[in-house]
Each structure stands twice: as C-alpha cells, then as structure tokens.
Length: 433
Image (cartoon, rainbow, N blue to C red; front, side, top):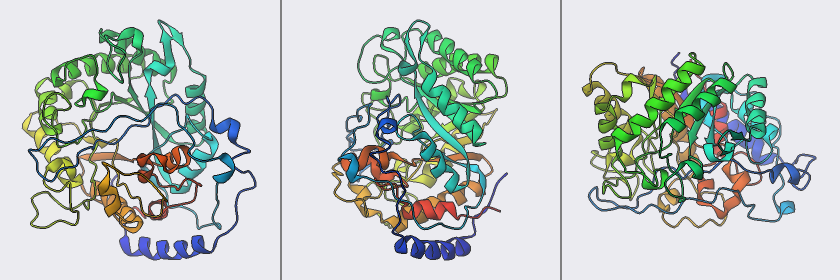
C-alpha cells in the first residue's frame, strides 16, 4: 500500500522532539564497556560503500572509486569514550510497515540495534550477507550468528530482506575483494540452502550487490549478460526452496563511470540486464538511487543546483535514477517488474566530529537538517510512484560500529554514541496515509 507523508505535521513534531532531545542528559545504565563482549563479536558482514564514488562535475570525466573498507569493524576510540546515549522518552513512532532500513545486526549489540529499528516504526530491515562468511568449505556452514539475526527479526515482527554477495575464495578464480564463483551453479546451490533454511522467515532476497563495479565482480568480466546468468541460478533455487519469497536482482552502482574496467554506467548496465532477460527471473529490480548532495526532487537537467559537485550526471540524482530505470524497463517490453530501492540515502558530516571525508566532499555540503528533509521527501516520492515498492534507507547504525574514523558513518541515522540524528527523528515521526 502506498502512503503520503504529511510534511507540516512531521516538522512540527520534529521541532518538538528535537527540543526534548536537546534537554536530555540521561544515559543508559549499561556503558559500552559493559557491552564490549557483544560489540566485538565476530563480524560476518561487509559495510558496503554506497556507489559513489565519483568526484567529478562533468559526465564524461572518469571518477575515482576509493578502496572498500575492511570487513571487521574497528572501534575508533576507547570503549569508555563511546557510551550509548538514550534521550528523554519521546512520543511513540508512527507505524510505517512498508518502509525499510538497512541495519548491521551481525556486529554490535543485536537487540539494541532492533530497539533502534522499532523506534523508527518501519516494517522492513535489510541485512547484507557475505556468502564466504557462512560457507567456509563445501558444505562447511557457519549458521549460528545469522540464525540469531533471523530469529531476532522474526520475534520483533520485522520483515527481512537478505542481500547476498561475495563468494567464498574456494569457489572463485582469484582471492581479491568481492566476486562471483567460477561456476555460477554454486551460487544457486547456496541460495537454495539459504532459502530452504529460512523458508517462511525471510521475506525477500537480493541477488548480489552492485555487479557493475569491478570491486564487486573480481575475477570475472564486467558484463550484464553474465550477471543475469548468475541471477537466474540464484532465482530458480530460491523459488524452488521458498516460492513465497520475493526475488530481487542485485542493484547496479551509481558512479558516473563507464570505462568498462572500474565500472559500467548503471543505466547502460541495466539495459544490458533487460536485454539478457533479467525480468523473466526476478520479481523486482533492485536500485541504489543515491542523491550525493542533491535534493531528491532535483534533476541533472535543471538549470541550477544546490550542490557544487556531482551535479551533471543522472547517476548522481535520486529522481533521475528511478525515473530513468522505469523508462528502461518499459522500453524492454513485458514483463515490467516493480523497482525495489534496496539502498538510498544522504551522507552528512554535520555534527559528527572530526571525519576524513576525502573523496566524499559532497557529504560536507549536506546539513543534518537537509539529510532529514531529503530522506523523508524521498520516501514520499517513492509513495507517489506506484511502480516503486519497498525502499530501504542506508543506513541505521554504522556510526556506533565504526565511529567517525570511517566516512560511511556520515550516512548513519545515529551518532557514534548511539544518540539520534535529525534524520532518525524525522523518519520516526513521518506519517504515512
């Protein structure tokens, strides 16, 4: 069901609750030191950089893709320096059962993370799953942490999307960053086991992540047709194991790059996916329409822009990415599946303390207030488009895991101490109709 945000009510409540938060000084009884054993539990997920990763103002210039962050989160300050904060009790959140948030349940305090999710009133969460952390050798599985995450989400009544990526080294041509297996049927085998294990408990699966980026496709050729072959293997296996699960194609990265080496332009890549028959295999097409520093309703074709960079290519605009993807799908003929926004968001370094945002300069142009405004407006725009279904904001809780030493924390709805940023409060009180 589609909803419409009521901005006037939202911002009135946001102003009120911001005043409450400003006056709050209480902290939780348990400090982060008390939670240290939970926080340093083995992390089995990779924190993916959203698809930037360009720093150019001209669509034909090459962009730079910075290296991926390390797999295991590192706390950037002594534990006693980063206590979790709890503001003065706020009014309850407004229920938004069709909205989603990407979380990181496999690192940090899982129950605290889910408390934060419930505080937003959303009905969906997305968790990224790295295949290589689950299957260490043929049929040598390590399920307990993911089992715990699925059970905890189910207990809270949250629908769960698992995004699956990163094949184990023993299935791959080379041991270098993320990439698919040499034999794509291995992906199908694993997806079948995953969907069988969580039948009826995981609502949706996204097959791979940003396959138009070389760093997500190491050891193979950047080629949308090859990716569709991988998707077909995974989709058939999921449907055989759990016919009710929603199957979503892995979303291309929005980069502004089209050199065929570091990346293929996301729209060109999607056209290739459609030509290779991806719509026959999936229930929905994944999209990552990051806005960089551009408001969600701006277009690269506009005469003027709020942002000073990343403003001359459709990949840098939330609206352009989704509208253009829809046009590409229609051009491809029937069937025309809906779009699931499996990642989106705006980075802001505002009020996050010292943070090296080299290569992410656009994050300095977005204030916390703008981050909040853009987030709510983007959800409202998705509500207005019947062909856009579930949307997942990236991300909830990177900052409490990474601290400010990693620029991805600028996307977090929480500060390193666990206190709410303006976007958290804005989403909490967004009122769908």
